[in-house]
Length: 492
Image (cartoon, rainbow, N blue to C red; front, side, top):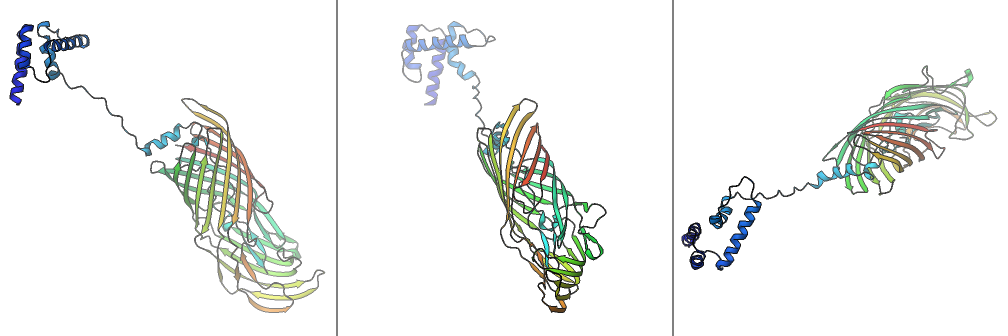
C-alpha cells in the first residue's frame, strides 16, 4: 500500500514538471492523485492559491518560483521547510513564589501596616511581707517580662532594629513605709530573619538596660536619723544585660487584606542575680497590716537567683482594607517553665506597740542557715490592640515614603493567684500579743491588672522605618508614670 501511494505521488509530480496539458492532467489526476478525489479544476485553483500565498509571503532572499513548475514546488515546499516553532507555553509560578511578590506589590494593604509601639513588660513583682516588709520592682525579678508586640509586626520580616524605651519611675524599692523609685532606660538590639519562603521567622532580642542596681542595700534607722531605701553612690542604677529572648513566628494565613500568624517566644535567664540586704533600727509601720507599728532591730539578707525560663505562645493578626485605616493585634500568654531559687538569712527582734506607743508584745526570731525557697512566677496574659491611619503616602522609583498615626491599648492580667512562699523561722522568744510571726515572699499584690494607652507616629523612608511614641497608664496602681519609645528599623 505504501509503495503504491508513493508511486502515485511521484508520478503526479513528474507529470506536473513535464508541463502536461490540462486535458491530459484531467485524465491522469484520477490515476496519480493521492488523497481525496477532486476535479482537476479544483486542484488547479488550490495550486494557484498556494502559489499566490507563497509569492506574497516569501522572504526577499527566496529564489523566484518558475511558473511552469510552481505546482510541484508548492507540493514539495511543506516537505522542505523546517517545522514551525511553537510559541513557548507560559510557565506556572508556584503559589509560594507569588505570595511575597503580592505582598511587596501591595501599595495600600498589609505592607502598609507599620510596626507596633508596644508596651512595658511590667507584670508581677517580688516582695516580702510579715515581720520583714519590702517590695523590689527590679526588672530581673519577674517585674519586666517579654512583651512580643513591642516593635513587632504579625508578618515575618527580614530586618534589624534598635529600640529605646524610657520608663519614668518604673523601678521601686520600699522598706516598710519608706520607698524610693528610679527610672529604667532600655536599649534593645534585635534582628529577625525569615525562612521557608518568608512564611516563618526567628527574632532575637538583646536588651541592654540602665536599671536599678542588682546589689540593693536598704538602711531604715529612724533612731539614728538615717533612712535610705536605696543606698548608692551612683543614683542606684547600673548598666547591665537583661534577659535575652527568642521569638519564632509562622504565617498561618494571608489574604490581600488580612494576615494571621502564630508562634512562641522564649525568655532566657541571662541577667544578673539580685542581692538584697536590709538593716532596720527604730520604729516602723507595716503598710500591709494597717494599724500595726513596732520598734524593730533587723538584719536581713536575700539572694535571688535568676533561673526561670519563660514560654510565651501567641497569636497575631493584621487587617488593612483598601481604605487608609488599619488594625493589628497580639494575644500572648506567658508561662514560667521552672521556678527560681531565693536564699534567705537573717534575724530580728520586734517590739509591737499600740496606737499610742505602749508595748503589747515581743517576738525574737532568726532563720536557719541557709534557708532556700522556690519562687514561682504567675502566668500572664497580654492583649495588645493597635489602630492606625495613613496620613500620606508617596512612591517613586528610588524610595518609598509613608507617614502613619498610631493608637494602641495594652492590657496585662495575671491568670492565677500569687504563689507565696513562707520563710521558715526559729522563734527564740514570744511574749504578749504578737500580730505578725511569719515572713512570706512573692507577689504581695496577688492579682495584677494593667491597662495602658499608647500613641505615636511611624515614618517610612525607603527600607528604613522610624517610630516615636508615648505610653501612659490609664490606671494609677502600678508600673510607671509614663514611657517614651523610639525605634529605628532597617528592612531587607
